[in-house]
Image 1 (tube, rainbow, N blue to C red):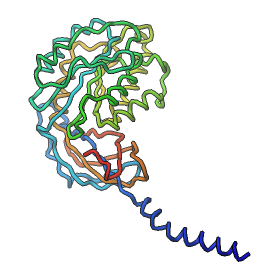
Image 2 (image 1 turned 120 degrees about the vertical axis):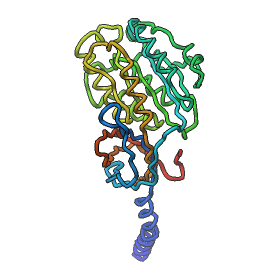
Image 3 (image 1 turned 180 degrees about the horizontal axis):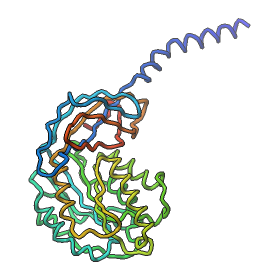
Image 4 (image 1 turned 90 degrees about the vertical axis):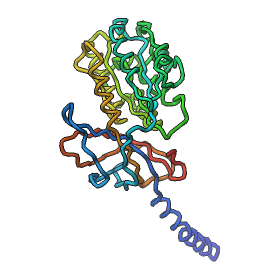
Length: 315
């Protein structure tokens, strides 16, 4: 009996001593960043100058976050990947001129590279470079073989896991040229595991993903259902990362140029938002919600962010 009482007392003391540590863990703070795009609603208008005072609220994982920094990127360094689906129809050749024009228009602060979706990987044809001629040497027509990409979502995950640079102080942006059709998961499902993995991987890597629609070779790619499914899934990925999916219906666009013009506007009007938020344990991908006062402007913020312990923060 005496031993039982003694053991009970020891357990109580241990709980009392552990309580502060548990409370500290509950109150642990993590930090993260988000790339936010603020655009004037009409072309030709000046983008509004947004300050930290215009931020109404920020939530990560449903919990209130504290803004620690808000600043325009302006001419900060950018790494940009143009990721082309090798299964795309050879008619993509009609857009080669627009791709070249876009690359040549990139300012000196943007390092670019071209990669191809092939067998579930993002296969790079060269390193990041500001030399436009060097970048464009890698540009070629896709193979146009059905299913050669394996899955565009496999390729996006691979791109995120093997981003060529380790520099996390730069903006990471990727433009995927694909119809988004996934032969490994053919039905529409917002919880498609490969799509969710692509979202998790790109958010962890800090990549803003954009997509340009171009139809692939293949039976499913030629169906309305397949294309509609692919584009809805690409919407999920781009919106989660703070990018956008450029498409209008399931017909190939006449020209990529309007989309590249819009992409350029977006790159020129981005802000970095840094914040702290409650975090339990390991780094986690959390839902993100931003309320921002920006009259006369449209605001695109990512729907997901990576929150890491403050001591492990990448930037």
